[in-house]
Amino acid sequence: MNRTSSAISSLRRVFSHPAAWFTLSLSVAIVSPVGAQITVTELQSPYSFVNDPLEKSYYISSVNGEAETADNNGFITKLNTNGKLLNLKFIQGGKDDVTLHAPKGMALVEHVLYVADLDTLRGFDTTTGKPVMALTIRSRTASQAETSQVFLSDVTFDGKGYLYCSDQKANTIYRFDLATQAFSVLVTDRALAGPSGLAVHPKSGQIIAVSWEKGKISEVSPEGVVTELFSNGFFSNRFQNLRGVDFDRWGNMYVSDFTTGKVWRMSWDKRFQVIAEFLPSPGDLSIDRANNLILVPYELAHAAEMNGLETPTSAKSKQEKRTLADYGFIPPPPKPAPEGPDKK
Image 1 (cartoon, rainbow, N blue to C red):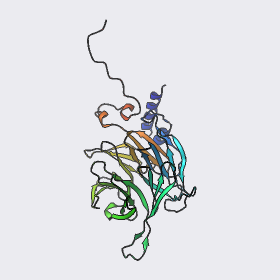
Image 2 (cartoon, helix red, strand yellow):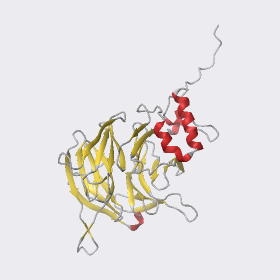
Image 3 (tube, rainbow, N blue to C red):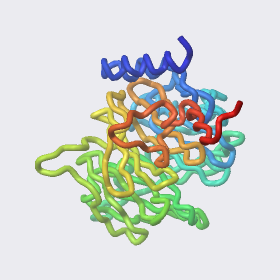
Image 4 (tube, rainbow, N blue to C red):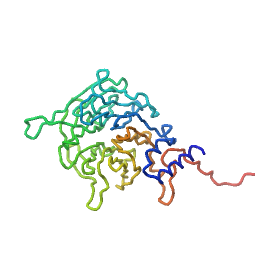
C-alpha cells in the first residue's frame, strides 16, 4: 500500500472511530505545503502556536506548570521553515537571564516575539532568544485604592504600531503603543465574557475577541466599542469555551473550542462549519497565511500540530466527495488533455 492509500485508510478509520482522531492523526504522514503533516511532542501544556513570516519559522509557548504561577519555568519552542524542531527550549525561564513564568499568547513584530506572561508583556529577539523588553501592567480597582492582579491571555498586532492584550479575568483589552512603550486600557466590558483569544481582522482592522466564559465572538473597534458578532442562542449551544481565533488569506475566520474539542471555520457569508473535532483541548490556534496552514496546540496532550487548509477555489459541491488534494496534502490529479483529432 502506498503512502496516499495508507493515509486514506487511516482517515477512514478515524471517521469510523472518532475518539481516535488525535492518536491516528499523529501517526499519519501526509504531504502538505511544508513537506508533511507536522506534530511536535514533548511540550508542556502548550498554549499558543504562531509563525514568523519574516524568518519563516514557528514558535510554540509552553506554560509548563500552573497557568497563574510565577515559577519561571515556562519555555518557547522554535521550529524551522519546514516545521522541523530547531530548539525545544529556545527561550527558557530561569536560564540565560530569561524570566518566563507561564507564557500564553504570542505575536510577532519584525524580529521581536511578544509574549503574554501573567501580568507582563515580554519581548524576545527571534534570532538569539534574548529578552529585549518586559513591561508589567498595573491595574487599579474601581476605587483606585489597591492594585488588582492582571492575567494576560493573548496578544495580537494590528500592523499599525499597536499591540492588543486580553485580560480574561478582568474582561479587559489593553493597547500597547510600540513607539512610546506605553500601555492603556482600550476597553473593560463584561460583554466580552472572558476574552481569551484575540485577532485583528485582515480587512476591516477590527479586533476580534473570543469568549472563554460564554462562547461568544465579539468585535472591538480601535475606539473600544464592543459589538457582539455571534453568541449561543436559546435553542443552540454551538460554542463552550473558546480559546483561539485567526483568519486565513481569504478572510475566513477560525476559532478553537477548548472544551468541545472542535475547530470551526466561518466563511465570508457567515456560515459555520466544523473542520476538525474530537481534538484534545485545542488551544490558541493561528493561521500561516503564506503557506495556508493551521497551527494548533493541544494543551492536555502536550503536543502541537500543523496541517494544510482547504482552499476556497478547490471547494466542491456537497454531492462530490473531497480528496486529500483539496486540503493541500497531496498534489491535485493531472487535468485531462484537451480533446482533438486522434493521432495515428
